Each structure stands twice: as C-alpha cells, then as structure tokens.
Image (cartoon, rainbow, N blue to C red; front, side, top):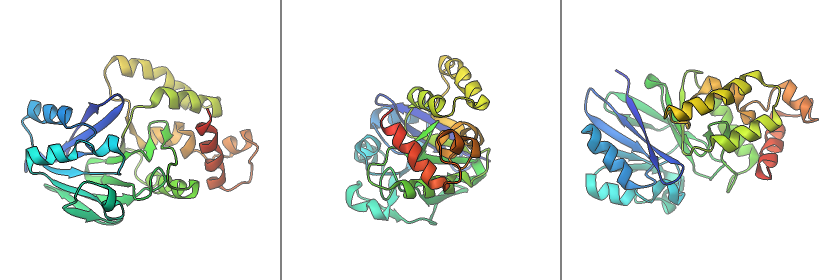
Length: 255
C-alpha cells in the first residue's frame, strides 16, 4: 500500500509534506517551516508524528523542528554534512542511506547546489521525491552555496527517476518560474499548455509545488539544458549541457 502524502502550506509560500503509512500508522514530515500548520494537519487526520526529515539548513525549512519534536517525540533525520547547522539529529544521513517509514524505504540523494549538504528523499514504491529547494516546479533553487556544476549533477540524478514520480518541492514559485520559462523557451508547446492550465489548478486549490517529473522534464528549462533547440536559441549549439544550464541559471538570477 503506497504512502498517503499531504502537502501542508506554511509561511507565505513554503510547503511541508506529511507522509503516512496506513499499514503501520507511522507518519513523517519533510521539513518544518512552521510547527503550527503541521500540528493542525496531523490533528485533522488523527495521525501521530514519528519522524521529521530535514532537507537543508535554511530557517524557512527548519524553524519549527524543535517545537514539533518537543510536542511529538519524533526522531529527526538530516544530512551528516549539514549537522553543524541543523537542529540536533537522531539520525545523520549520507547519500545512499535509507529511511524506513513503516513498510516503505526512502532513499537519500545528495542534491547540493542551492546549499552544500542539501538532500532529497525518494520513496520509489509510492513514486514520491521530496526535493525542497533543488528541483522546483518550473525551476530550481538559487545557487547560494554550491556551483552550477553541482546543481546540474543534482538535477541529472533527479531526472533519472521514473517520469511518474511526483516531485514535491519546498516553495510555490510557479508564477515567477513560469514567466522565466516562457521567456527562455517560448516555442515550447508543452510549456504553453502547462501555463494555460495553471490558473485552473490554482483556482481548484491544487498544490502548485507538486508536479510529475515527466511534466517537469518537458517544461522546466533547467531540465532541458541538453535540448538542441534550446541550445541553438541561446547561441550555445554544441556546448556541454552543464554550461547551458549555468547560462540559464545566470539569466534567471537577473530576470
């Protein structure tokens, strides 16, 4: 039985994510921007929190962790490389490690770039990956600590996952990301159709930060850095994919 996933809007544009194993009753949260909405979502569903999974050290992803841990006794998991700037960890993780939630195993992926030590959690049986500020809906995180090469390597790992994997990212930046994507990739019919659908999705209350990987691969310009059409459009035919990515990331920084 797959995990039940519930996005929890927090702060102005953040998301936490609850994942619940119906067979065992265990429940985890990925990132805690604010404890209050997470606690409310748990109470609404009658779930008891067992685990807190942290993706990276930025305050808008961890500032509710200690409050939530104190209220629930949940165990905290995070990157060993980031342990010096995370809340105290019960489990320090490296790439290739696993996290067990009830009957399902999650896999830890190093997705450094936005920060160094950023990790993602992939639950293959439920086709879920929690990417926080690495891969985002129609975008990727700004390179505050890592290099463009690091981020491209991280995105390449994520692109290798099955296309039906739901990418659950840490923010809803979809409006700004859509405007940039259309600016650099204006002839992409898949992108045009996705943008046309976005207003309906917002009106229906669908979380804009949860998108199938296959849709991202067809519409997110940062995942299309290897496309010959996009390279030619930006005068970079024959250039390495990572250099095209770096060019696009630089354009987004000043867009």
